[in-house]
Image (cartoon, rainbow, N blue to C red; front, top):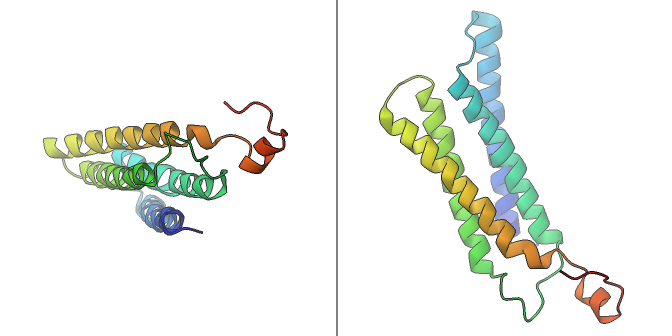
Amino acid sequence: MIELVRRFIKTALLFLVLGLSVGAYMLVRRELFGDWPRPYAISAHTHAVFVGFVMFMILGVALWLFPKPLQDDRRYRPARIEAVYWLLLAGTLARFVGELLHAYGDLPLLTWLAMCGGLAQVAALLLYVWTMWSRIRPSARQLRIGLGGDAD
């Protein structure tokens, strides 16, 4: 398993811990003190778990499992996947922090932080799809022996 794959998976696990911690805090506040979580706090929790954990895990495992790029593959570049990692990390953290703090304060900067974080997430995921598209194919071995079927 290459280092970048390990980084995606370990980051996913850290976001899971972060999301579970916020979720547990909101649960305790609701059940013991009748303090229902605010919508922005719920959104922060959801993004930590679903984008932070689920998407990082899916992207890392897909990077690990998909067939290696062919020699003439012009789309796939490890530097692009590295950019996806950092863009998705920065975007998810910005959205998480922006929305969590926005739940308890009303600074206009927090709106911009959450929005820019969300747009960075979208950009990162679109770049990942574009970069990995050519790797969604039969393996090179299957292509050589003619068992691959449709290679687009």
